[in-house]
Every structure is written in structure tokens, then in C-alpha cells.
Image 1 (cartoon, rainbow, N blue to C red):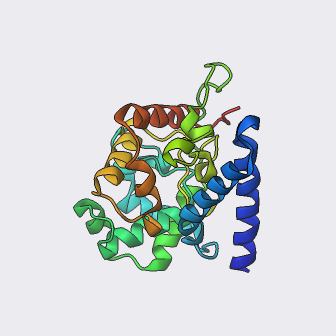
Image 2: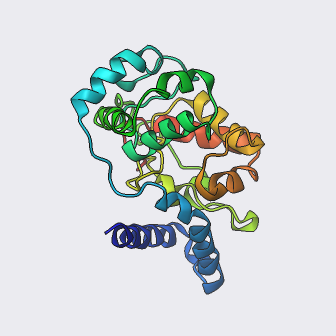
Length: 237
């Protein structure tokens, strides 16, 4: 079942990718490049495994004790350096908690919060936050929001795939295990990309994210962060 779901997911991603490529670039060589990008990003698509199951109400009760202080009530954080968890992929959030507990992703405060949680409790928390919506913001049309080329097209000259391959142009990917970026704090998105770039964070499967982020300039990182942060609960187009 997992393999079938994976192939269905990849088929959709390939179609989306080809549609995002400019017509003059849709030659066989460019398609091969895009397929090579998909191969690089394959570990991200496989990391989630089967959809997690759990008790949302139990997750809410645990979150109130362990998570709300930093991540905010219902997963909406007031601190620009602390991520929103509302509407976040449950598979992704559960993996991050496991990585904090095992030390694969380092953060002393998060380790203290999750070290006594078992896998089911983590799943419950993740499902609770996934069920919570991010607040709506001004629509993309009203603020004339245009996706940066790195989001919609990537940069074939530097072998950089479009962010939208995994994260979606609207920042609300349906690929399990891939984080939803729409409405996330700019500061958090910037610092996260910087951590991947300098190696401070390395819990991306297969190093796929690091391989891409290392090629980005400070200006490009900020542009991507501002775009996804501006989306909030709205679609990009």
C-alpha cells in the first residue's frame, strides 16, 4: 500500500513539475534534469511511511501541558523564532519529535519536552496540531503575491529544483512527511534554511534539503521565506 501511494504521489508531483516548466524549456534534456531532481528528493517522499493514527483529544491534553507555552494555544505561535504547529503535517511533526528525542535533531529545550513521550503520544500531539487551522491572512490576489522563480521554476543552471515540487506553490503540500510552509514565520523559515545550509541541522532524509539550500544566497533564502510566510491560510493563486 505504501509503495502504491508513493507512486501515485510521485506521478502527481511529476505532472505538477512539468506544468511549472516554461514551454521553451520542456525539452527532453530538461525533463531528465527534473526527473533527477525527483530522485534526489525521493527520500523526503518515503520518510513518512503509512499515515499515523492516534487520539486527537489526548494529543490536545498533552500539548496543553508540554507545547502551548512556546508554540501557542492551538499551535499558533507569537514568537517569530518559534514555528506554528497548526495545520502542520502530522507525519512531519511526529518525525521531528522523534528526532529531538533521539538526538538526530539537536535542541536542549525540545529534548526535555519530548524525552518521556512514547511514539503514540507523539502521534497524538501531531494529529492534534494538524487538525488546527492557521489564521487567514490577506489573499494572494489582494497583495499581488507572485512566487519567486526558485519556488515555481527552480534554477536548472545550478541544478536547483522548484520548491513547489515538494512544498507546493501554495505551501500546503499533501505529501506526507514534507512540512507545510504556508503562513510560517519569516524569521523561523530563514533560520531553518540557514541551519540546513551551514549543517547545524541535518535530519532531512538523504540530505536532500541540505543539497539544495547550500546553493542559495541570503537574498534568495529571504525571498522564499517571505513568499511562503505571506500565504497564510490562503492559496497562492
